[in-house]
Image 1 (cartoon, rainbow, N blue to C red):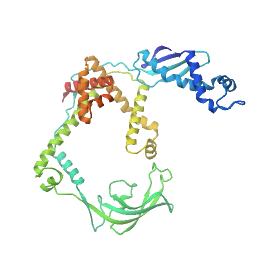
Image 2: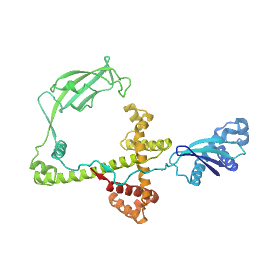
Image 3: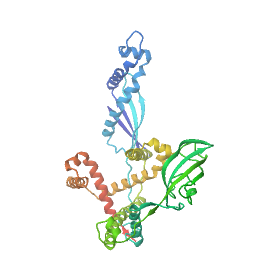
Image 4: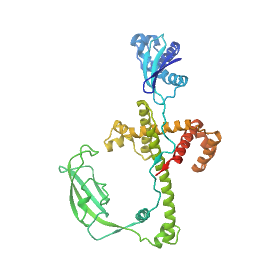
Length: 424
């Protein structure tokens, strides 16, 4: 195998990769053995017709596609390594020559890691991030805890916003019941906006035991196309009205939700925890503010193929997150009405931002001669082992040292520019 490298515009390159004729012949023979049992030739039982006979009958190119698909991945990987290029995209493959008895030649166009021209990155000015815990913060947190420890009680009055109503309902369009439009014993929090727009509002002021016709119109972009934009009538029976009862904020409340005996002690601890949380959030916010300035001061030309790869990776990660929740991308697209292309376009700005941040941090690490030693890596592995409650050897088996060093050097660069920033 041989490879020629041609540098192109916009941080791209084209690799011309040549595979020896003998290797291509071996690949076609492999393709023949893989497919011969599916090919019929008169006078031969399936799988017994010679390769030459099949090629004469169906054309010499019958096994070319499988042979090329077999050769390209390995040949490209070897060529990419031999080229010494810092490739940051999937290859765009184009077959140049595919003919029996001749070398197999193809090209792979790739994006290269862009050069970064750093601007000012030390001592950049940013707006000061506030870490003060206010009375409003305390009240908001306590209110959240109250809601978590609330209880529902049945009331003998008409329903109001915030109440939970237990209902039976049956929906129809043009007088016909539709699939998924009926239920019994359904709990609905009025004002939660979980039902079709206009549905919940028509139950405000209704008491238990009442029967109500709720008239609504499905949104034009409703996930079920057969219902989109249609007027519907739901016959609703209100079985029960419940209101949420929140606990009083006193010493008893503190004892119920914590290990403290008094409300004052609980609030003191809460303020400490909120302060720690705000400091963590402030650290992340400060880092982002600094990176926005530092990246804005830098210059780089990012290839489109690099952005496409990053976007694809983000979509794959999102698909994995959905899968962990028991959902698929197909269901996600069905309910949101989006297409894969629209989701990719939505993710593109974040993909570009991620690329720019990483390129700039790597450039800063190089400019500052930030080095990560094997001892640094070992310390990080030990820290991860404690965090994950795993044996260090187990953690070590999951990690690639080179990748860890790159991640750690980028993190050190981020900490350096953040520490040097001036808050105003």
